[in-house]
Each structure stands twice: as C-alpha cells, then as structure tokens.
Length: 223
Image 1 (cartoon, rainbow, N blue to C red):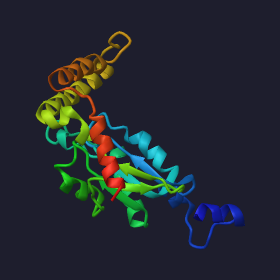
Image 2 (cartoon, helix red, strand yellow; image 1 turned 90 degrees about the vertical axis):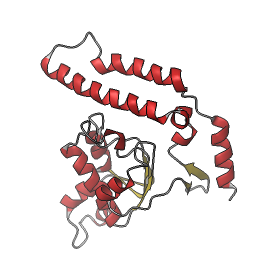
Image 3 (tube, rainbow, N blue to C red; image 1 turned 180 degrees about the horizontal axis):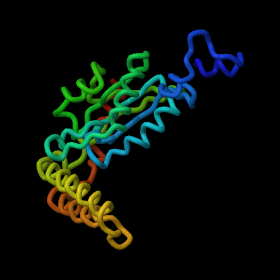
C-alpha cells in the first residue's frame, strides 16, 4: 500500500498527494474486503455521514454493496438527498475507478431500479449473489437475503406500504425535533415504527426460512 511506503521511507512517494489520500481512505486501515448493506440512499434514515467517515479511514481490495444501497421504494415525494449522500457515492465511484473490485448485489429496495444504481455509481458488476473466499480459504455466500424473508415473498406490496409510512414518520419526527420539545424520552418515529412493523408481521410473517438459506448455500458452494 502507498501508506505503507510512506511509513517505511519517511517520505511520500513521488507524485503522491496526501490530501487525496484522506478522501480515498489510504491513510487509514486496509482490508481485503468490506461489506456494506442497507444504506438506503435517498431516505432521511440514511446514515451517510457515519459511512463516509468510515470509508475515508478504511480501504479494501473488495467492496461488496450487499443490497438496499439505494432505496427505490422512496422514489417520488419521499425521496430525500443530502450532500453527505453525494459524497458517499463519489467515494465509492472513486474506489471503483482506481481499481478496487466493487460489486453490487441487489436487495428488495433496489432490485427494480438498477438503472438508478448505474446512474449513481457507473457500470458496476451486478450479480444476485456471489461466493467470497477468505484469506484462510473458506468460502462465504454473499447475498442480501430478502429472498428468504416470507414477508417479502408473500406480500411485497404490504411491506412497501410500511416503508412509505415510516418515511412519512421520519419527516414528522424531524419537524418534531426542530419545532417541539421531545416526545417523552423517545422520538415520535420510535412509537410509530413498532406498530407498523407489527402489522406487517401479523399479515405476512417475517420468519426467515432458515432451511431455504441452508439449501441455497449448500447448492452454490458445491458448484
């Protein structure tokens, strides 16, 4: 790594700009692989600031975007975008252009809006699942997992309604924080999210089909 060269020689390599290293994360820790899941770009719930801080301090050879990176369910009036989300997209795109292996694995919130993913990040490899091999030689099935959620397979439209309801609740909560005193010791959305979640669970169930997960992992790892 370039950062290692700097530490060993005591001087920056020729042509190396330390300022750009802060953006690319090369001054921080380096890993073989990093997984990011359920970022939900396009929503107020997205923790873009936190992720941006992490990315600027950690780099990797492989960066797996494991589903629900962009929230296609929020397109329309619920769509929200911040400067921090723009910077996250820039950081990930920069890594891809500089040679990192960046792979996108769709989730239930972005699988129908892959054109939006390409608009934001460029031409990334998009696969439904992949097998990652660790440094020790172990194989890992990397998949978002919504395929094994009974609430997704039996009544996706009901889950989508719940997602939209929560997006509206986030707006109300932001207004409540800015204009009013705290709602007891908990935010307004913390009261609203639980009944919405329980309603989805009641009508569809949210039990993961563990046997299906096992069977899929065994099948793909035997290929």
